[in-house]
Length: 210
Image (cartoon, rainbow, N blue to C red; front, side):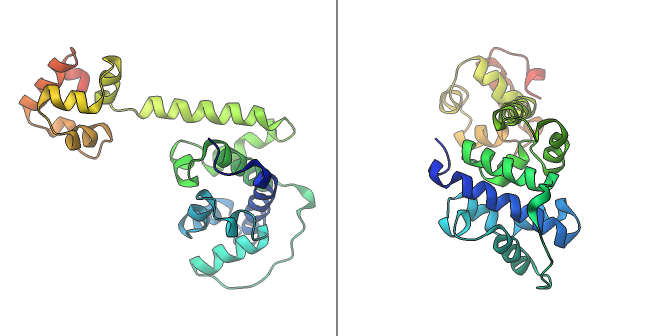
């Protein structure tokens, strides 16, 4: 399921492309401006398909709103998007990726699709069909997920158990199972008996979970 109707996609891609291009020109640093975008609240609203931000503003208006919300001067700079810079392309494909995955921009970044990474793809993909970029980005995100999965979750999935089933088998609360898998709690600091119970339930060694 995509983030919003495809009829808005072209405008959304254009707006995000111009926003990042113009914002970079004014900020002087693309990554610094993108961080502003993420912290401004506009990225979240864009990700929620708020029409005010997806199609209700031009790219320049979006960029200026980012600056206004994150505290900077209101100086207007001259801008002409005819060159189609690397930043323009990065904003364009990022909007497409966000629409396609329905993930927030922050989650996309956490899955390895950072602005420097996007800019590094520009020489290879900026003249290719966007499906080529999409395949590469999705593979990158999947690889990131595989590499960052917790040992406990990996073993649980191998055993085809749900978190609830594992909690029942071990007597460990579902809340703690989730915390260990999401690495909000360090399983290596759990009670020895709890880790042993988990290992028995998952037919693995204690060392496989730590």
